[in-house]
Length: 177
Length: 192
Image 1 (cartoon, one colour):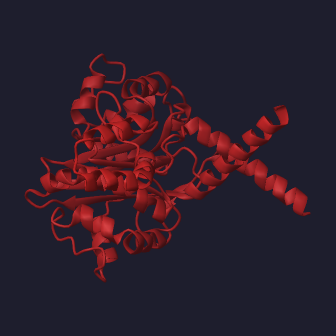
Image 2: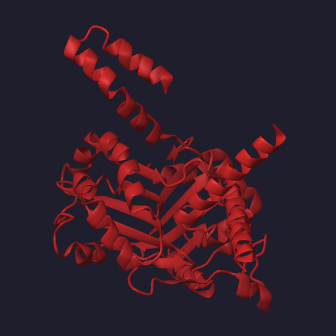
Image 3: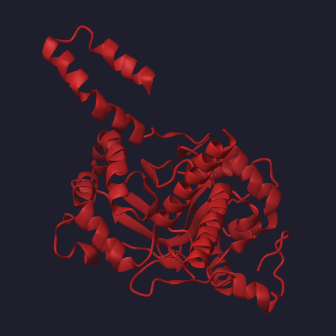
């Protein structure tokens, strides 16, 4: 535990029990705390690949809303080009198990991944390739530190609680009108 | 949104008739698309934002011995950094060691504006930040006047940024967590 002034202190057992545990995904790569997991990938980029991605960036961004809602377990996701556009970082925050997520993204959003990565990432075999999961796993770099502010809240839980709040507000409005 | 639709109508005012008819036919779908796809905005000095949630992606070379020190510290903390709860605006964050432990990648999703976010870290957990980032080359210290320049120099803006609930802040999410818990308790009680 770190205190406000950064000094390491002895942690009472009760507090230690309340601190969420960060661990490797039981069924794959990446770290997880309660329900919330991370995957970070580092892909090699083809010459001119970043420019091709940028030309298509507006459509990719617009399509994100459709495909990510279809997947339904993603809290946030980014692609960032680094090292003079020679590498592409992908970082996602998602719910649940590794294998379920990997299967979900390439079955539900295969067209979006092809739109983003084909002719951009060196060696990308296509989302429908039988070994796409293995290929992706080779490019994963696991985090050494992982923090999520609400580790028990899945995307689905959040949506449900938002609906409850809206219903409650409507109820209060009706009661006061 | 109405302004955007008006703008498209103006653009198509002198289009051939088939185009004008097509626009009217397409308007319902067009409105849905505009509503579903909030545009990315600047998060401030560097980075982009969707709704209320911004991204920060930073890559910095490790100082001599820095990777070893940081990895050792993170192992002692078991990969956790719960001190971040005190900041109150951080959705998630990760540290990743890149290129044979020569570079550190730091990514985070946070609420609001870049300047406020850095100020929050500097005010609420300054020593934690120095413990972590002193392991990177040239880190001036969180209390230094040049710390924002250092961060901006090492930050790379994302080309694509998606957020599942872009209008939800960390504080609101915590409130919703309590609402969800209360609802479960209520449902349990009435089903007894």
